[in-house]
Image (cartoon, rainbow, N blue to C red; front, top):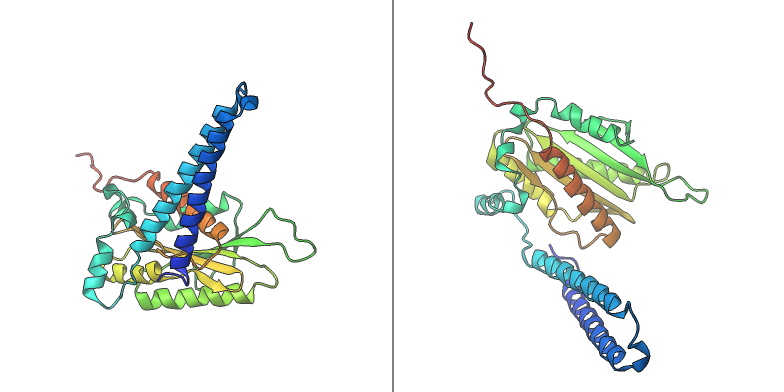
Length: 275
């Protein structure tokens, strides 16, 4: 699942980080030896900020490196592979959110309302629950303005074949609508309340394996919310899409997942008063 040239990318990042670290240390040493900088008040603070930023860069690189090592192409038809995917904790929601459909009955309507309240406009739906678009704040220079697009798709009997079909349908519409409503960044949110955990995990493999490329200059980022199992699947390998797209999808995924976790839930077994 790794993108082409991933070893070269890792080595180039190591070289760049090494040069930056060595350069910062050399500059700090030379600044300490120069009498002209001896009375500079903010020099130490400037170097502290530079080393903090450098440390963040190293942490991000290590996180990406660890994620790349963990990549595996899961086979939806292989029970062992499906079980390995089911054991990955990063895809789990808090335990209290298992059986979410029973305590959040209007989740489909509230998810649509969530986007509408943030100035997303609802467009053509079939075969989706909704297709939402929002104009980006970028100059158009006489061309059609860029938009972000979100596809919402619910299915009570989801499987990997349906996931694959819907992914292809999204890729087709992204290409067809690009002239009139160009959307370089596209999200697809599957949700199901199916109780067959193994089948949903198999469908999740289609999400986790997806490489997020939808055509020239466009990307598609699918996620799957398993309401009964309390899980949130997303692609593991995003190395084939631009870094700015990766950052956008990472930020929006975390924000949407946090929004789900904050939803007020009904009691699973409400207590009724005795007559």
